[in-house]
Length: 183
Image 1 (cartoon, rainbow, N blue to C red):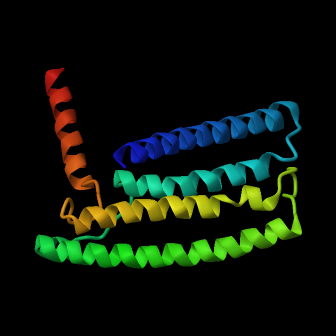
Image 2 (cartoon, helix red, strand yellow; image 1 turned 180 degrees about the vertical axis):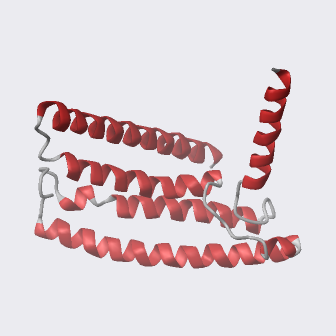
């Protein structure tokens, strides 16, 4: 199972990187076309919009994995480790219900778009294909939530992975002080 998660992690990171590069290059090229050649791509804005949607929805599960999401945990940190695990399990279960509702709604929406056969406005791609990130992103988030729930249930963690921004800021301030002192 850990090997499967490593494969998923690497694939997710590669896709996020490709989406970011593609979006950046597309916007850069669009700016060059508009301001240098006074023209543009008819499909550029729509492609950028969909690339950014894919980027964000892939990034949600990646953010959960890396602890990049903002969390308000001042109250939870006051609890014992068991209390933290219980609160985390409740939060994960509620998040899974939320994901389940969105997955269900996305499935209905994508099924209807597939049945109707509508294409995007400026790109010859079926709408259901372009919007399939709804299912993919929420499935990835659900997978991350299930992994977290397992870690909480087995006692490997007491809560969501989070970065301590205050601690990081203090560390950066100390490094800056050392650099200034070394000059």
